[in-house]
Amino acid sequence: MTSRRTLAITACALTAGLALAACSSSSTSSSPGGSSSSAGTGASAGNASFNAGVTGVVNPSTKKGGTLTYAVSTTPDSTDGGNEYYAWTLNFNRLYQTPLTTYKSCPGACANTLVPGIATALGTASSNGLVWTYHIKQGLKYEDGSPVTAQDVKYAVERTYDRGVLANGPSYFQVLLADPKYPGPYKDKTGDLTSITTPDNYTIQFHLTAPFPDFNYVVAFPQTAPVPKAKDTGSNYQLHPMSTGPYMFSSVQLNKQATLVPNPNWTQNEDTEARQLPSKIVIDLNVNAEDIDNRLLAGDIQVDSQGAGVQAAARAKLLSTPSLQKNTDAAPGNRLWFVYINSKVAPLNNVNCRQAVEYAANKTDLQTAYGGPYAGGAIGSTLLLPGMGGFTPFDLYNAKSQPTGDLTKAKAALTACGTPAASRPVPRTAATGRRKSPGPPRCRRRSPGWGSPCNCTATPRAATTPTSRARRTTSTSTTWASTSAAGRLTGRTATACWTRS
Image 1 (cartoon, one colour):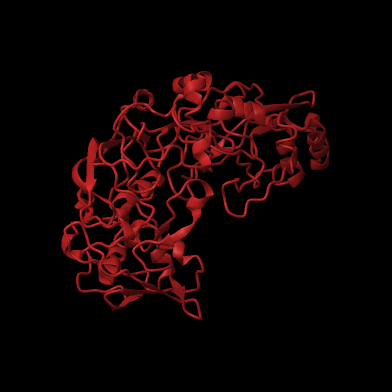
Image 2: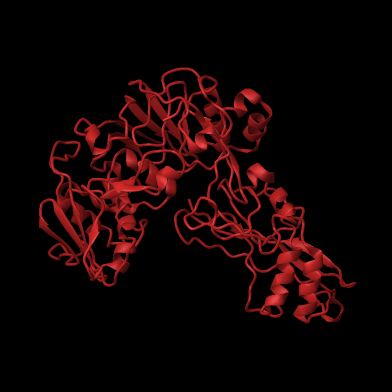
């Protein structure tokens, strides 16, 4: 919890954004339940400083009451835990649903720690790695006072098999469990997902087709948040998912607003780090991005739910005003922007030719085109980013030591490529017969994980900042190097990207 406004400049590793660390004087939290926001802008008080909220809690609150207000410029993919995959909705879901396992409620790297949710402990695998067993805490209740059982967790997973009804969530269970062709309970009302068994009301077992050591992370998705079969309304369940968390829905207006209030049947021992401080939590949907920034600065709202960072006007104001900058975080977003070079097309099927492109790339130009160090992010030299497990820093192509390009090594690689610039034919256009220079590789969109693809464009070097609000992170290749008639290296930028929230 923090009484800083989360005005994020969201810095990343080729993309950053300012995150105005923004909550009011008794305000917010990244943990479920948060704290309340009752008055003032308050972020100037206490131990606020630039980036302090990235690794710590600033001015924590213990006050109860008030309204905590979120806003987002889009809409959630769903509020049904079985049908979510956006990063911000997975995080927001922690307010009202609890899966078998979850993540520790704390700032910085600490939040990567996996802890029990409704389970008594992390799961245990059988000796052959094919059966994972979880025991559910006894005495847990839904918002209406009815008991939570292992059968409810099994049903919650079963319903995600029907992609015609719940299309958005991940498909790990269909891939990992022993009967992937199970159609789901909506199509087969007499069927049963035999790869999940419940020996008793508080034990659930998952039977895998092959060992998967990271299965504890799979059940941390809210797809394992229990769903009572009698309350399931299919695609309409998102209008009122049954709460097992500190808050529950009191009203939902699709595409406009949702309101949550304290769950009377939630107890602190279910999550010792969560808090149930605000009297009400409101999330406004489809709000203009600039309006969100202005309302954050004014203290009218406390959290930008999507967390992608403020827009250009607010960013300039935050960075130029010391009293605002101290309440701002440039939080790494662990998103990557990179250039895709098609290694199947000659001469780029030659590693030396690709290395020439890599060395010649002007990473500073691309960073500038995407808004500079804060809006564009830090220049990166690795695919794994500093916030990811297993990250090891290295700089094979001098992206950091020579960000404007290492032309000496680029020329050497081009010579080794065996494609002298002056001897390469330049194609003519069919319509005019005029020569045209080879362009950058085709930009492709990819979305390997959470979130949706970011804007992907091929741009000249003097490109303008893209309109996507997604926090963009690191770039390993940023410029397409072509050769002029005189054999000199020239540059054109191209981007291929994905977002991972």
